[in-house]
Length: 114
Image (tube, rainbow, N blue to C red):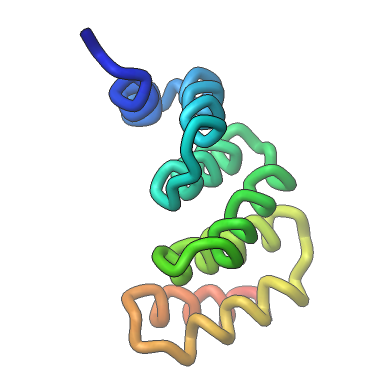
């Protein structure tokens, strides 16, 4: 028997984002987990639900201690998608000053939107 978690991950991997979003939301209602919240943010972004994705990533940054950099990267993409260049720049500048793998990506993207 597959668990709801397994079903959610399988739906996500199969790019069945509508089903994945429903399952991730159900999982989060039962237990708040950073990994699930992160995947829900990505799922919402893929579904074009940019505001929901932004909320997911902001919650992840504010309420959890892990995955901040990944959440900030995707949050910057949400800002760009919603044409909020000012917040995108702030987020990308912040990422560009770090020593993480997203730093070079953030710097490249900043150059493109300047």
